[in-house]
Image 1: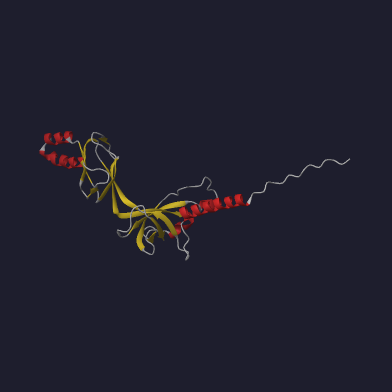
Image 2: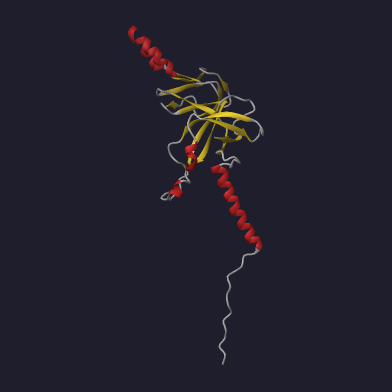
Length: 235
C-alpha cells in the first residue's frame, strides 16, 4: 500500500512589481544618504559637500537684570549698527547716580549705558522675544539681528575626508539657482566633535562613517545670493 505523499512547500516568489519596488526604495535611500551627508562626487576627485546659505545672525542680550521699559523695533524692521533697540528701566541706577559723590558719578554713568541695548550691526530684526514689562535676564536673547549681506553655511564632511579640510582654506561655492557662476568662500570653523554618531562605533569602518560640521563664510557680497539658497562647496 503506497503511503500518501505530502505536497512540497516552496518559498513564496516575489512578483516583479514587488522586487522593483524594493529596489527603488533601496536606491532612493542610498541617494538620499549620499547627497545629504557625503555630497556629490566630483569627476576630478575633489571633495564637495552641500549646504544652505544662512544670514549671519547676532543675538541682543543684556548684562544687567532689569525690567523692560520699551522695545523700539519689531520683527522685520531694518536697523543700523548702534541703533537703540531695547530700553530697560533705569530708575534705580539713575537715583543712585544722583545721590553718589562726584567721584563715583562718572562710573555710574557708564553703567547706565548698559540699560539701552543697541544693534550690533546693520541688518534686519529676525526674531523678537521680549515685550515691555517683562524682566530681562542677563545672557538671555531678547532680539536677533540678521545681516543678509553676510552669508555663511554649514556642510557635513565624513571623518575619512576631514584631513582634506583646513580652517582658513579657500573654497569654491556654486549656487543651484545660478548655474555656471562661481563664488569664493573660506572655511571658518571645523567642529571638534562628530555628529550623527552611529550606535556602534567600535570598528574603524564604522568610525569612518561619522560626520563633522564645517562652517563656511562667503568672501564677498553678491546681491544674487539669498539666504535659503542651496549651494555646493568645493574644497
